[in-house]
Image 1 (tube, helix red, strand yellow):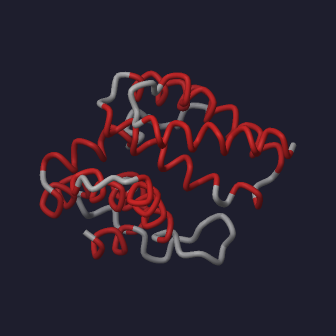
Image 2 (tube, one colour):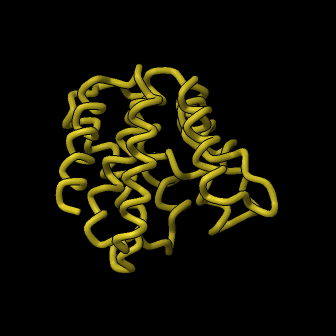
Length: 172
């Protein structure tokens, strides 16, 4: 699991240009563990949740979905696919359209996929103080829309993310 995550994100950095990107999926997994999750499938999917989206940036010759299936199994691949942005076309639609598609898709997702997506957002907010204020405001609004749509996610992660969004909103 870990090796595939590192391979997919090799050389990629977080927006701060200091932190290796693979620290992000590790943080998502850590959030789920701290929340009390012990489900192996959900924890493995946390490590691999960005592999299909970001792996091709490093090596487009690899079938990343097949690799996730080989390493994690069908249940892990299913969760990863729910949180992967796959509906993009060329040219890529505007951000607002993509995020609308994401909310609509994730609103139909199973509980664990919704929980994973909210843990991903919570991990992203860890770095939000470093974001451009206008982008941060947009990201917080998109996160509020996700919180409204993802009602069957684990109540603990839903509450944690809602609290974090409120804290950032007060800081603005």
